[in-house]
Length: 139
Image (tube, rainbow, N blue to C red; front, side, top):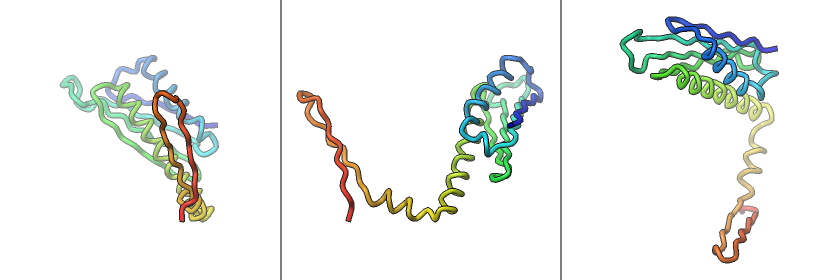
């Protein structure tokens, strides 16, 4: 079970903002349920009433195989900063897990397969309305 926590510092802790944050985390977390043990999202107002790019969102994702990954985003709006930070954190997690998988399986065989086959897409004229996909082995 993954523990998700949202903390607010200098920002109104509205239920709508908390629900939005948890919804974003849950939607990105589905793929990584077995890899992630906790997610901490910290939302802060850096500049106070002065405005500008002052909403600071820090997302920390922890898991036994990936350690801790932290991503920070700044934005004029808390919702935008949350969306960007959560998406970046889970993209980084995905890259880390993909790298681990590639190094565990040797990675080279996977790359050889991708390099060995080329797909060509040939579009035909609009009159015929058909397109053809060709696949051939590279030399």
